[in-house]
Length: 58
Image 1 (tube, rainbow, N blue to C red):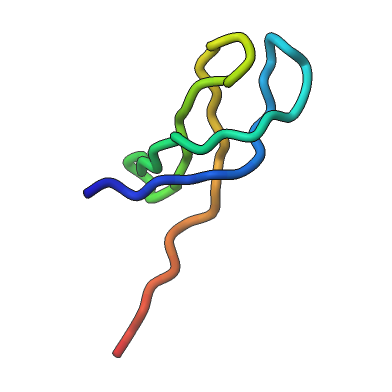
Image 2 (cartoon, one colour; image 1 turned 90 degrees about the vertical axis):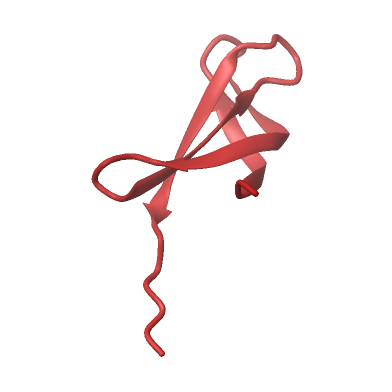
């Protein structure tokens, strides 16, 4: 199951921060994570760049 993100993202079309609950977390080829979802007001795709996933060594 894919990791999900709920929190604030900036919508470029609305020019405001919006709360999303359905964003899916993906990872690019360099290990950087980002959340992709849709703006609840205008329906535009929004992306939030997140930090790299923390390595757990046990």
